[in-house]
Length: 295
Length: 322
Image (tube, rainbow over all chains, first blue to last red; front, side):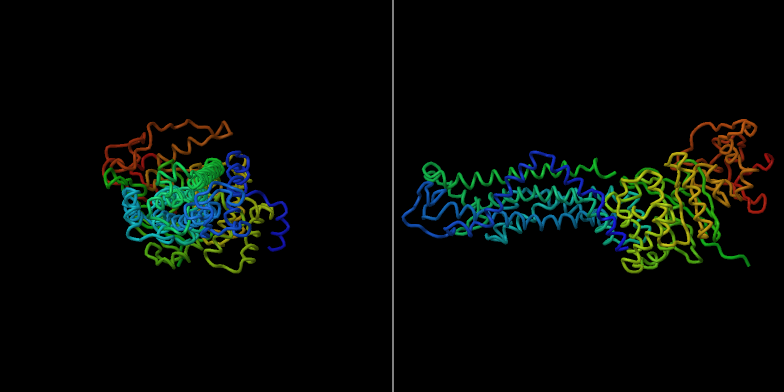
């Protein structure tokens, strides 16, 4: 078969995923989102290779100085370079957002999938759990969890992950309940397939659109949640930089009025990044439109 | 002593419980159905929509559990098997679906679809599985390059061939074909029917063939079972059923089959009304509400299947009509 497979590889037709990518590339806003996001991510990941200052270096002659040739984005109250802190803050923010996204996507998929394919009893138990998680008021829940888990990067990730999965598991469950009655899934059961096979070979590929869109938008909301937590002092604590705790400095009227570069740049970075991610997420949602693909 | 039939179904009953908080009526989809499918033979199940054809087929393929009654496959009771035994059994019974557009996953290549069953049953190596899949493609007259394509690239008839290839690849002993041609164009129907007939004869397959089209069943099946509202009305060798139907319902069905020969067009016997709800079936004979020959006695006890000729049985109390 190896021979026959390679012979046909040359004219291998487009799979559903490939067609979704094609549709995505025709969406201008989404492509613009990628074009904005890519340089931001590259800069954030590589800044220590080309930027002379480290985020916690103190330059005593440059305290609360505005943007200049040496400190492009100015410096803060203790003489730390805002550019370096912005880049390091981006690293932390994206780290928190992507890791919590990965965790909540896995939890959300597994719970939703087991509920969808596992039968009525498992379904009820899982969905009551989801109901419970959804009735918790998010901000208060976040604050309580954060005060229990403490501050720091790992607790922030845990708090954000635990808050985000219920919506995804609802969506995955709904998709799989529909999928379960489809003939090709019944056919797989008729060939003796067990739950792991059904989940991995049918459940996962047929909810990949939900997962990709959710994951993308979850990164954006993860950035915002991290910023909110850090702003309130419950997230990533100083001296570690994050976009949220940089904004924290804007709480003082003096900084807000006299040193706008100290909060304006992290604020702008966050707005632009979140906006770009949302564009990409919307583009992915359209590209994966189930009406165009599931038949 | 006659050979034991491959599939033997006795007193099979399926009731679907209401979904909404246990309220609402129970749907009696299949009621006390018994029949046998001998090895190498094709048994046709016919009936209109809602007569329980598909439910019986799915129970025969162990896709759903009967409410009561027994399904014996090759002498083994299948309703009380462990998960592992059931998985082994699933390799021996395969199902062909009605809708060729819903029965193939849009996210898998044909190769993946065809090897899925072998993978589940852990048959052979990857290369051996692919080889079997290519062979199955050849058996249904599809080119080998279909292997790496997706289902959406094929027409309805081709998709149905893929569905048949998927059923064949595990080399099953019994195939349950659930209206394999009703979703296809008439010209394609003939091709698929001929293909199935061909494969059945060549491979010596045993088949439970479900259809609502009597003309199709006449061509394929050795024995025909006529269902109405989840009960067997008449069961007969194919030829006998078509030449001398005994049950009023079978007669009505046969008179509705269009014939190209004007001489064969007798008077149409048109049934009035609709099939009653299986949630609230009539007492006695379920067909009595639409039967032109119904008597008061028909509302009494449920008429039993009685043999009226060798291998020919009917569930009707009126013998004066023959």
